[in-house]
Length: 416
Image 1: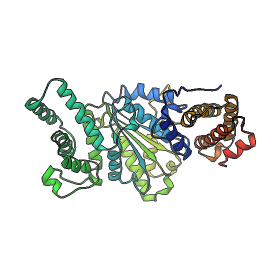
Image 2: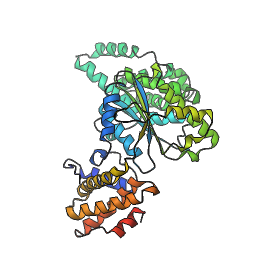
Image 3: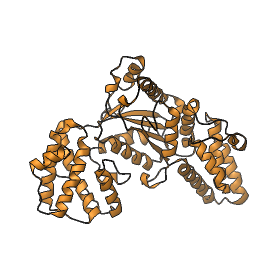
Image 4: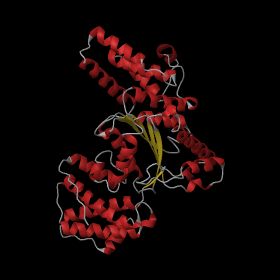
């Protein structure tokens, strides 16, 4: 069976961005909906059971996304990002690496979250990331609301002051003061002051003058990271958003860390998972991607504690399990690859303003999908298939009579 997707509304430049990004082995920042395969059931359940109900109503949750490198973890997280943005959530996609944002240093993780955060949008990839964009979105939305009620001049100023006084109860008093100040600075056009406070909120710097000038009592360091994160989560809800969705994507495997770093990382992860049972950490959904669970084989208490929290498996009939295992059942792999190939061919055709002989295209994609499946144990199955498919499309673009042979498919499947 062959699958088709309508791409009549796809912009040619976006289509080209998709192909260029995928050819480099990376999921594109936008346009996922044009070639997403095998995720609809996951997304529908997550939206129904969590984002539109439980999390929105004050709950919190954690899901571990399990798949080998090149099997679609990042694509899945991007899809969740778009889904959350469509449901009025503030979202942050944070990449984790040993050098720049190791999870054993929570202050760096918080800073990454704050710098990558974005407000709700029908197109999550089109908005500027960072606290600046979320604060501006919040300010503009609230001002439009006030002006829609006919408030202006002194009445508007009084309404703003009364509204900002209602932002209270955050764990970090400095965070609480910072978001209030940012609203005022935006309204008063004090750009430099606004940028200074945003810099602090993002954990990017602290000047000694900030204490006297803004009432910000400390820099964002390790001892304040969780406090800042909990304050962020609570403020997001107070500001009128549905909640906060955090997406953590490991860029390197656990062996890249030392034993001590790994222990600290896993302990921080356990702590963060446990936070989702804390009533003061409501309206929050966490997703953390793993290439596998082999790193949990150690017998230390930290490993055992985390292993217990990752035991249950997410299923469509039981969506309350923690582990989302993305690899499809064996009998569905080739079918999904073929569907993916057909969808990508439509995107490629828009990108390069070309068309394909459908019989030759479908035959070539089927041959390639079967060859990639036979080489699946090498890892990165989907990524290799996608990159190989783009090579096939290029051949078909130059030669309408081209049909991929089994030998050629085997070579492409092995990375040739």
